[in-house]
Amino acid sequence: NQSGWLLVLDNADDLEALVSHLPHYHLGHLLLTTRIGNTVRWAAPITLTQFGREDGATLLLRRAGLLSVGQPLSGLPKDTVMAAAALSLELGGLPLALDQAGAYLAQTAVTAADYLTLYRERGLGLLDSVTNREHASVTITFGLALERLSQRGTDGEAAADMVRLCAFLAPDAIPESVLTCGTQSERCGEIIALVCGHSLAARDRQMGTLT
Image 1 (tube, one colour):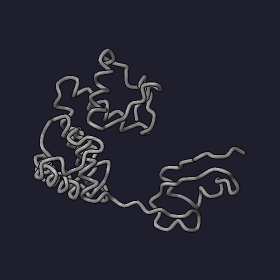
Image 2: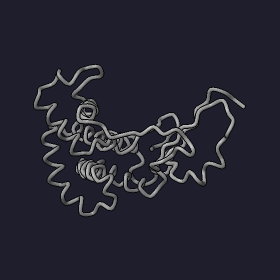
Image 3: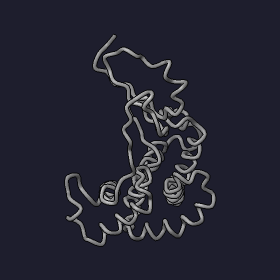
Image 4: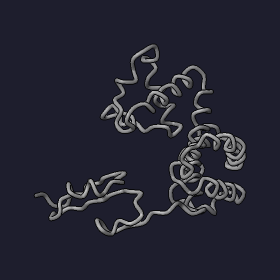
């Protein structure tokens, strides 16, 4: 009965089961994200594609802290931009993979060209264990980030363990109280900061949750 609302239903891949629960007459908006190719029976489709080389390079370099908001790519050295564009192409233009790669650059201060070399070297081995080839680049960037995280001393090892624990839980709004028991509880804040710094989770301080 309200107006001006927006309801987002993420990963709505079973529209046949979902459609009977949707309001047919309303004064708001429904946004469904889905992998279904043809949705015209239920909703007007808006197709999202992967980032192109330039957009991908922009996201990567901003996440790495090398490009400020509003600064054009032309303001950086040409070899840096070319390496970032090549890396964006290699990652398939997937925002999550680009975000994780950018976080890696920010944490390690390696160059985009160095990361590209590392990705190609380690990626060949990691690809052997990838079951979902559509998201192979995310699997590799996630693996590299987790490997780097575990090398950050005792807190890094605890942070990697925290990520592995989270993998057994539903991904959204994990209560921090679930993660603070045990010997690392007194350093939980620092450990969570490490996890978030590598773009392996996002923290909601007000709600006390990790996603």
